[in-house]
Image (cartoon, rainbow, N blue to C red; front, side, top):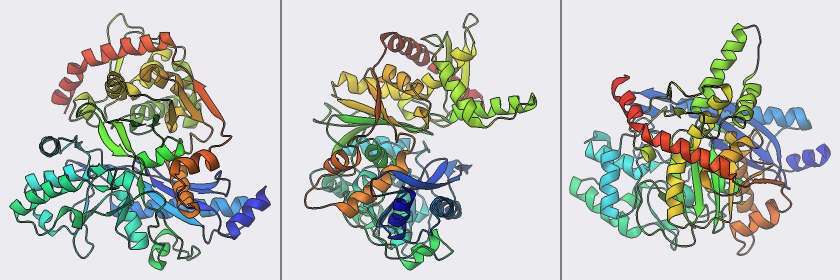
Length: 531
């Protein structure tokens, strides 16, 4: 087997996907059977500077180089060859945000990430003007807020993109983006597979009134659906990723995508009536719609699959951050007792203990809001564990409310889709929340009231999904659809574990959500008074 993989790598027939997630940059190499064969990663964190969540661009490139170097080392150690070329590659990243550049390619303002909740006025104004929900984290909301703030740099913008779009631009020289990523910048017309022309014209009117010299479509990246060619890796781009000079230029690159799109690809949830939930630092649910929703909901984003099909998205800023913080605390406690432990066994113990907790969490309530959570109506976050005197604070109950809290805001949005009678034939989970068998699936099934499946590749997540999109771009023949490619070539024979909702779990989660929603004034008071 290793000899076959070695020959695939040496012949440049593997596919590479790189994703810049919130806490980890990961590179995944897959073979011709689409199974992962090597990987590399880099841990990073956002910074809170001058009232904004951001990442420095030097950290972007340092992290990418480290992740790629780890991948190259993994290839060398496993297969005894150097990674010099691949059949196709692609880059994905955290969706949304704000990266404005002038005509010389200079960044005009620090990168404003999806996590910021500082664009409420702009989002509300645009939602009313377009009669289309514009969430705070969307690029157009950030742009319009900068306009409302009177920020001097706006007049100089000549290119506005996302993190994935920026990296792709630097690697290829092409100012393009995948349609799924574009749908988190500005509303998309799924028939034309392009920005909605009517809404773009309305915004051009705003820009003209302010005296700006640009039009929206001139500064946004060109939209490309999955399967389209999006340029090639330039010599300069190859050097950016691999300063050793081993990586060769000329590699075809597919359209850059957001982590939502790669999640859909990684879970084979790109067809109508399918859905997926990506649960990691943030959590979001994506459901491919067969008909439009009856009205605009502020809690529901309308985005698209990487092929441009309309998708209802419930996005929550906070998911596993609080779990991560407590696991780190338990690790310190064990070390103080003389028991050194990695975090992996602690995560597993916590998730398994949750299965033994009382169905409603024993009267405890936890808010995992490290940052603001628009779905729940909070502008800032204050992690908070509260309980009544009679609540039962056991490790199992504590673990259960940790897992409930990670999905609580998501459930508020899923309940809206339920009231809209949105049909879902299958819901697939992926991301770190599902790494421990059964626990995460059971909690999500209880929240969604639907069966939840996890594939054996669930832990691979976004970078694997990006590699699949690169493979589709390279292998696309005729009119084969993305869903056809995934069904027939990638996921045929894939092992799937499915858990149906347990009525007792569902009733317990509903009881917890009632307590969670009822005590929300406590969380909002913590934001006000805990400075």
